[in-house]
Image (cartoon, rainbow, N blue to C red; front, side, top):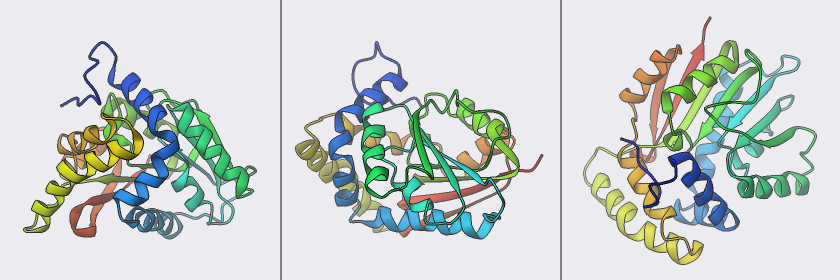
Length: 247
């Protein structure tokens, strides 16, 4: 199901997502950490450790692409691994402005580069990257299958693709607690802080209708990826997916 962030059906999902994130860019980091109780930071650390443990980051010219990079938190976390050159793309220019401010303050401009880019038309060459990451972004793709095929295209042989994304808890009582929080408290707090009534009501709706776990695994297979695994994080609130381009 194609979930749109607001009621302006004239615009495409991609245009609406771009506008939505532009509108909340200056409050995004604060709300991210507040609404997740800071757990999002631990999830990003897991991605960094997964890259370090599952790739040879000592290779010369090791390149990583972070798609839907937002304000750059994952790219900055990954930069703690020596030797990696990181590119980050996002469709929201305002989010990228926040990301660029961060890397300037942290003196990371020589290792991380951000540019405007669309996951379904990635502005890089075939077989260019050793690894690709997407954190909390694949559910916002307008055409998920097209986006996955683009990611496959720009990965090198044996390249690693990691997805970090929200998922739906399955076990009682955490499942019930999660949905009460996600459907009721999160949109109210998000609206009060961001002054945007759509952004944090779109979030639970997009999670509800996203093809997660085994469904996402099938989509990764169809895009050409191999050796696909996933594991749940924090009682199933999020999942991390690992896959490779083997040929």
